[in-house]
Length: 569
Image 1 (cartoon, rainbow, N blue to C red):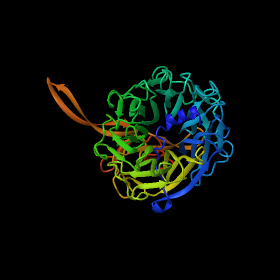
Image 2: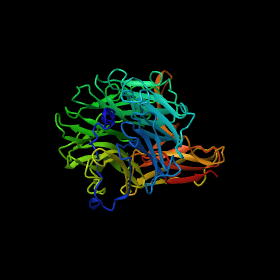
Image 3: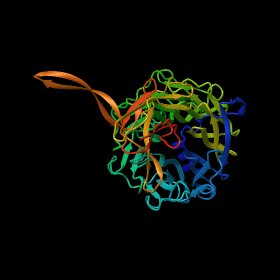
Image 4: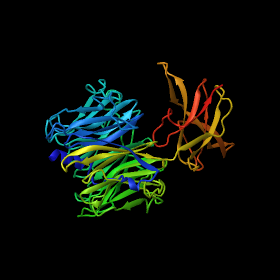
């Protein structure tokens, strides 16, 4: 495609050949099996960028080339998780297309929150051609895909920081707002940009950064930002900077406060971690966070060559230091071939670390999708997954690009786009059933027969996986079932109390005396100890069903989580 498409791909898929492989069936064991494959395309340049899951459906976003030429249009699909079939009630037969301009338009990111779909990307409407892209953010109804008119102007917010190439590349949400991450060219070169917007109307939230915007420009070259994660009341953002020169890109991670966007100074150097594994073009494909650390994944490249290898790092959540027990000194490298191998997606769940990207071990013109599953603590391959920890897929004999990985408790979805004839590409999603995901067992070992209204009551329990391994450092929350104003029952998260021992020093008869006492402090969650145990107090205010919920890595879903119910008598 022409210049715009090339630049778009360079920004988002800078290591597009960094793709993980999913494999031919002979190598697949019983533990992991292909469930379904779905493809869609326009016979032109169609790119699938991102997916999200909600309930029984997955949602995919990107663009297609069905209008021909450089007139790319945004595309959203809604599919059933069990068979991949398009949902007929969404848009037109499961598909929504949007064409704001006669130039390139596309959607690059999606987030789902409170039964609404938020998407972000770019459109060319300021110039209706190449050269002036702007950010485009939409809010849609999760059922039928229609735009929510109260958001922005008829469901759409645009932001055009410069007269050159500006694109939103990721979007994450919490209860306080919508964080949109991307690049802008207002300084004449690409810089990082973060906007925080109101979930209801899309307005910028002025308390964040400067009038709702934070920018970061590490070098005078085109620095790019790719992905973001909300964790530990902070925003972790990953991408590339060229502060070592235009032929030596390095990984960059920033940790920022959700409230005002300022850097958290204790992380790395002044809130920034930089990693430069080689003096060539290194690429950070993805980052993810769990309770044990920050995982970074991408590629490192030998300077002046096309030989790039996979690289995974695990870093401390607080200070950003490498965690030495993971791999060798905190990092794992592997090199499936002497060509452009690399990682585009990484996901951490309680049973392991899923890593997805590409390898060119077949040939330099035939990229293979590759998925690895690794131990969260030391990075070793999980042998029960695929073939000795690796699963490969070779959709076509051409160049097939990996984009991302989506995981739920039934398995995982690998998505990307595949070559048709060298100039045309189709969307592709593969679903795998995976019983190497360890089920959890949540028990309340001290459940009183009666919870009395208004009385502080201790609830304690233990969390184990299906192999009876005790799960430490995992989060347990308590919920109660309440009747809402619309006469529907819902699970509401409640505060719990944890007994904490504190030290008090005070002066008695002229002498300093030390007292230690136990106090109760309100918390919203408990963390399991090294034996998987947790304990907390609740004070029931009325008759209701209460339950403890383990989040896993899928967010808190009281309806679907394993539960222990207790009722006030």
